[in-house]
Image (cartoon, rainbow, N blue to C red):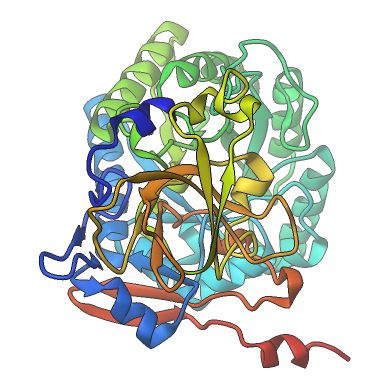
Length: 469
């Protein structure tokens, strides 16, 4: 962050490495435009806070990732499947976009399954995750014809086998395994780490695969491993692939046939702030590296390259989203010596911090409060020639941790009535939203080619009161 604050030269720049690629600042009034629609016009029609999703950006990104992975894995003689993670952000319209762009859909609950089915997604292209699927959810998924069901515990094997037998079908299943490799916000660890809620021990793989194969109502599709989130390089995948593929030769011998698929998860990272932009992975390069890793590892293990599946996560939808908020109050505070000095070096150079309170907050973006996530903010209703000011954007909730943007710089003349745009809020914002303090969830609006439409209706206080009995 220090580098970002030091590098800021134009507070009016809309960095399309963080904002949707179809974003720009208007020449005359300096208003932010997304897909040729002014943020002020969106706010006038739909109100704030407001989630805005650039449909074309989302579609282009999804298609690019799918094509890159399929191209590179075709180069090494196999096929790649790409799953859109419903948990990042799911509604009927977005599920349609992803299906139309050739992606499979990954769901983790009965509710997410219902959304995908309502969107007309082919059930065969749906993967069903979750560490505690209920019998009802399992039965619904099997009855719907979901393509794959990921087994996350030993008990689930028997439950799914029984449900599939009762339905008279043979259900394809994957076995989720902890490879002991972890990546993302922290350095990956190449040692066993099983103290978590997801997955099964690597040491149990062969035994459990044999148990699955023993059921006539189950088809063992292969292994699944998810090593983390916000992953910026292929290094951890290299070790995870080595460990997982190392089992495939033994599994083929024990089961009497090759294992058809390997799901290496994903969790590819995005840039939330301009200073992360240089670190965010180039998808073409990452896809080529992943294909080479899998091909080499299979060659060393003496097996054919299986079909490989990936779950790119937030990287498909995160950058396509922007949240618009209206400033209500501002408050200047003096930075304490510990803040302005060695105790908080990211604030060096500023003696004061301006608290900018907006009409949204942790109810529409819980990630800063949950994970200390960092975001980037810009004025959306105008440009400004004012000097830079260190700011902290905060919400309206009765909670000191209600922070939207921990630290960034805005023009010093930011004031009540201004509109702010927070970048890269397409993933894990709406899906983690709440009604804390009885604040209604905002609408989600899709923009494309100069037109806007609601894809998720915003809540009203009447909606919230209607649930009280």
